[in-house]
Amino acid sequence: MLLVIDAGNTNVVFAVFEGNTLAGQWRISTDARRTADEYGVWLTQVLEHAGIVPAKITGAVLASVVPQAIFDLRQLAKRYFHTELLVIGDPRLKLDTGVGVLIDNPAEVGADRLVNAFAAWKRYKQALIVVDFGTATTFDVVSKEGNYIGGVIAPGVNLSLDALQKAAAKLPTVAIQKPVKTIGTNTIGAMQSGIYYGYVGLIEGIAGRIKAEYGHNMKVIATGGLASLYAKACPLIEHLEPDLTIYGLKDLYEMNKGLI
Image 1 (cartoon, rainbow, N blue to C red):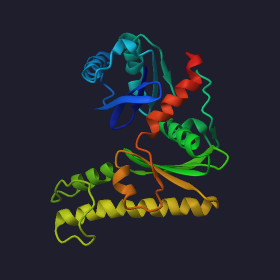
Image 2 (image 1 turned 90 degrees about the vertical axis):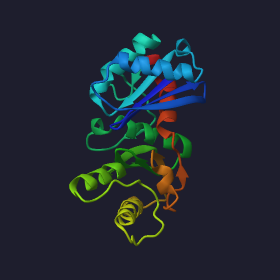
Image 3 (image 1 turned 135 degrees about the vertical axis):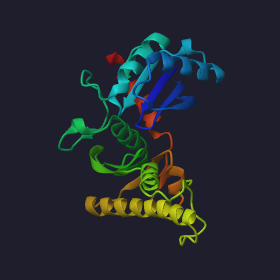
Image 4 (image 1 turned 45 degrees about the vertical axis):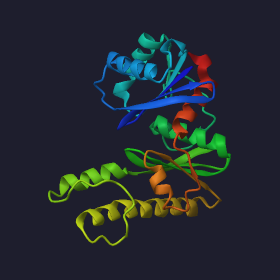
């Protein structure tokens, strides 16, 4: 069995694959101070609760945008699963990603964005825009030749809403959901409309500009926590792939496991 870890700025997602089958996935809030033992005690408990025997895990792979977390996640793999952790983006490894990185400084590309580009290209084999609804809302562009050629980074939906609520003392806390109507007749309705349709406009506007600039047919893929909510309102989103990153990590591990 394979342990897959996607360490983002907000959550760390753990998933276990048995062959090509996703046996389960769990998440815990990201905290760079969390130790290997804290991860280990929590993770072994949730695995056992799901009927997964930790001793059956024989490999582990990580994509992380939180450098401070990598050491303890390495220790987690060693101490609790007796395996070495394959880290995407580790400069010591000559990883085969199947995707060329054609930007000014390839080292700047976050591991999660590279994994998403690889996973989307592997599935669709054409020019792509991958919209990831995470802490940031990112647009990653893959050419028709399968190269990562750049993208866009915007503030994430939750981040924007949190900033709005903190900066305006009288505004309440609201849930992110599709409002009944666009014109809000109360504060909560107005805020929900702004955050929902504001990001619908952002997605359509940025993706439309990317398509116009690239000049060829492109498929738009959505992934990340809020992808399902926004895909319903954005006809240009053609495919919803909520588990794109973890499946991409599994495939990258299979391609590179000989390096560890």
